[in-house]
Each structure stands twice: as structure tokens, then as C-alpha cells.
Amino acid sequence: MHMLNSLHRRRLLQGMAAAFCLPGVQALAQKSAWPGRNIRFVTQSAPGDAVDVRLRELLLDLSPLLNGATLIPDNKPGAGGVLAHQSVLNAAADGYSVLLANATMTILPAFNRKLPYNPLEAFTPVAVQGLSPIGLAIPASRPEKTLEDWVQWARGQGDQINYGSVGNGSVSHLYGFQLAEDMGLRATHIPFKGSTPGLLAMLAGDVHYGMYDTFSLRPLLNKGDLRVLAIAGEQRSKFLPDVPTFKELGHPGYDRAGWTGYFVKKETPLEIVARLAQSINQVNAKPEWAGKREQLWSEWHSMTPAQLATRVQMDAQAWALIVKRTGVYAD
Image 1 (tube, rainbow, N blue to C red):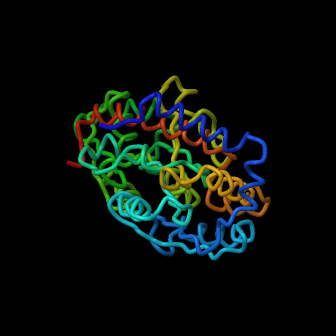
Image 2: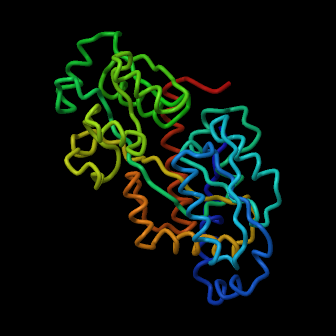
């Protein structure tokens, strides 16, 4: 497993901080020739899904802040984000290819040991696009209303309990495994291709629980088909204010959320990283974008590249420990 060493990480964070703090850097970026042509935004989302739709909307608002450049969405779904990653890595480090990635990026270095690159070292973080807490979901038809009551029931099922995920090595897989380990459940993992099949299997009674982001759970929660017993994160979700966090319930180690964020190839000039980050955060801070996020139960707060880099590194370290505990690898 490859991880950023401490010296490399310090230099990366110091360089990003300098890009925002040194006098005149932003002014130079504003006057620079970049961007002087089209910018490609590569996403692992499929055309027409909610993340893709929001990206296309954001690019329309972002273009005027980047010299009116044409910003082109480029969909590269598949292989857990690897296809999208490689598309950007195969391009020059000049700011004209931007990656929209998700939290799976922080799992890949530990899960896929034969990956020919380390995404933690190959990319420079730019800005966060959205945050989505992970919740423990069960069918609403179950009588249990609290985590404690449900765990007692699940323990009584022996090895007949199972959980769904969006695939091996995903956030939902690793959190589902962590929950089973921590709560003493003898649960079997059932991977699906995406969240919808797994959630429908839960409603059909074929799957007993799942750890999914609220973005994916929202439609079935609104219909009353699912119940969320606990939320991962440091604080309750504003969209599920009555649902306690795992931490509140005395279960630490559930502080990682789902997220999407922008990255560029390593060695992209820091003044371009700073310009891009400032512009993306400026769009996301608009009141109308708060409304768009609320429609999807997506949260957001401004992060500098250095702050996003810290979050990515911390997530990667935590997920690596869970991957090792599962003993499940892509290879």
C-alpha cells in the first residue's frame, strides 16, 4: 500500500497554503493566460445522473469566472473511478483537465494493491463540491426504532444477517463491515452495482441493512420506505435532525462522510489551483446553490485545497485500516 509520507504531505500543504496567502498570487492568476482555451471536467458519474446534472449546472455558472472559457463535462464511469482518474493523468498538468472524484478515491490505494498509480500522490485537491453523511438504513417495516434495539435483534439472527453495498471496496461496503464488526454481527456482504438495486433488495427483505449516503437514501426516506437509525459524522445532518450520530450513541470511529470534490494532476501550477478553487467556492457559496443542494440533501462548506488535502489524507488512513480488517482486495 502506498501512502503520502509525512515530508511529502507537509510540503504539499505548505505549497497550497502559500498559493492562497502570498501577496499578489491571486492577482497574478487573474492576469495570467490561463484559461485560454476549453477546460475538460472529467467525472466518474454516468450521463444524466444527479451528480452529472449538478456538474453541468455548475459549469455554466463557473465559466464567467474563468475568462468565459468553455467548460466541457466528460463522463468516464466505471472501474470505481479509475477510468476517470486515468483520463486526467494521461493529460498535461496544465489545469485544462479537472477531475470530479468521490470518497472512493481515498479507499483505492489500500483496496487495489496493483493500481499503477496512487491517487493520493497523483492528484492535487482543489475544492469540495458536496458532502453527504452516511446513514445506517433498515426497512421501515422493521419494528425497531433505535440502534440498540435493532442490534439486539440482528445479533439474534446468527449468520442469517446480511448487508448490501454499491460494490466491493466502496464506502458502503467498508462501513457495513465496520458496523458488523463493532456490533458483533455475523453479517454477510452482498455487493450490488449501484445503490438502487441494493436498496430495492432491502425493501424486498433480501438485505437487512445498508450504510448508504443520504443522497442515495433520500427518495425512499421521503416515501417512508426506509428508516435511518444513526448517522456517521461529527454532527447530525440538517436533513435528518432527529437521527443521532454514532458518536452520540457511544460508537466512535464513524466520522467519515461521502463527498465529491475537484482535483487536478499533480504539478499543476499552484496559482491555477488557487484560481480554480476560489472560483468553484464562489459559485457554491451563492444562495441559489444552497437551494439546489437542499433538493438532493447535499451539504457543503468552503474548503481550501490544503483543507481538502488534510481531509483526504485522514480518510485514506482510516479506510486503509478497515480494508485490512476485511481482508478483501481488488486483486
